[in-house]
Image (cartoon, rainbow, N blue to C red; front, side, top):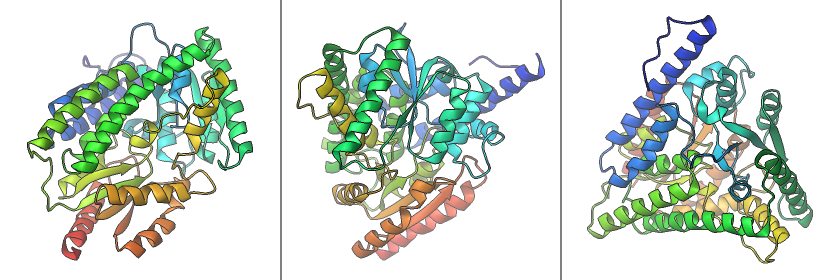
Length: 426
């Protein structure tokens, strides 16, 4: 990005220039930390290039020319619908410290940092990846997302998707099917393309190719939990938010090939004696990578990520039984809610079951439960998780953080002590 001179222009222009300078500097800092971690795969470069393109060079999403963008704010927005309508989904959950500081003047003190960052990006109005979106899709998964939808609607064309509180009754699914049909109408208004069985099938096939490559990656991590740094994996999964699915699929294919070849040669990214850590809870969104970096800097091996910025958002394919437009819509409604481990639902047994499964698959020895300050839906679940892991003798620690760097040293002490506890306990 060319240098921006903050002493020129109007006060508002200088404010925007300072924002871009600070945002870019933070992104550069964390990209450098990610790239400086040892044993970085060569095939990780396209993923980090995407993050650089968006957050350092301040460009839009990486996509074919002429394809419009639709901003999404949750994994419960099926990307297949957006691709079928001739657009590209761009996941805009914010992890920017700079945007968080701007949003802190807009949202209440106790609001979620992620929502504050989103509001900050919208308020400042200079990030191309946000500004190029022609429609915003906000699932109502918590009170903060509800108020966020109202704020965005004052500035942009916005559609809300009302997520049912349950997902086991047929009535719950019928409700979400109706939401997706209303969403598809809004998409058609933006792109002029009617959703059809043929276009939906094509989009499902395209996302299925990405899901296949991700399943390859997951299987490699199950067989070789130490084959790749967890922070590198999280960078690859964050990049899917800003990359056209066809490009991301090729990037992931190349990454899988490289990791598989290294694993067969016995080249691991972490030593066998490093405690194996699973991270769960509130999402970790670039550039807010301080926690995964600390885990690996302090001697842990981050082997699994159970957050909505990890495999949760892309792994489960739709189970299409009825080969019709309505059949695909219903399959997408089911796929977006029933396997989802988000704690927004009343019954969260699926989340507990999924985490227990991951503990076994990745031979996890400790769990770090990440809570963004003000994120009540995840914070509420911690006690249940602590009780269940206590029965298995697996240590867990709750780590609360914000989108600032003032708590890095405090986090470092806690993470280091937790890793030492696992070492000596073992």
